[in-house]
Amino acid sequence: MRKTIHTPEYVMIRDILRAVRRKAGLSQRDIAARLKVLPSWVAKVELMERRVDIVELVRILHACGADVDAALAQVVQAIPVVDEPRLRKRGRGTN
Image 1 (cartoon, rainbow, N blue to C red):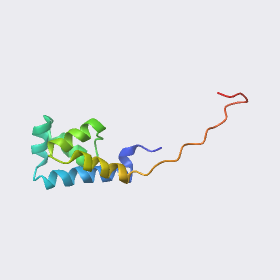
Image 2 (image 1 turned 60 degrees about the vertical axis):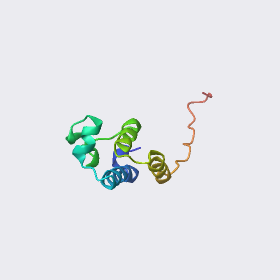
Image 3 (image 1 turned 30 degrees about the vertical axis):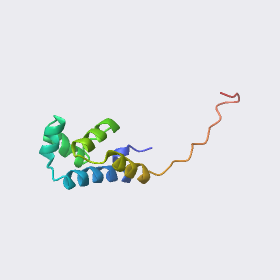
Image 4 (image 1 turned 90 degrees about the vertical axis):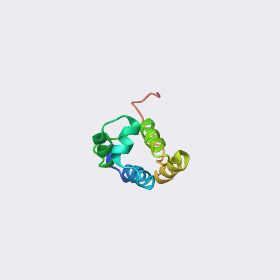
């Protein structure tokens, strides 16, 4: 599996974050101040030079005054369900 930051789904997450920030009329500096991080941190997130985890994602959405549930639902709907991997047999015995 390739790193998630290089997937179309992650691009969509970045796009959601940008759209939410812009809709709120906030600059990257505004968000950085609210999150108590450097503006470069926010820029790196939006340029996909830095990956955000779920906690950071929720904090960014809150800092923008976004409807977190709606934004996360949008993310979940955009991520395809992956079929369960086939179980491989290991040797002759069962594990």
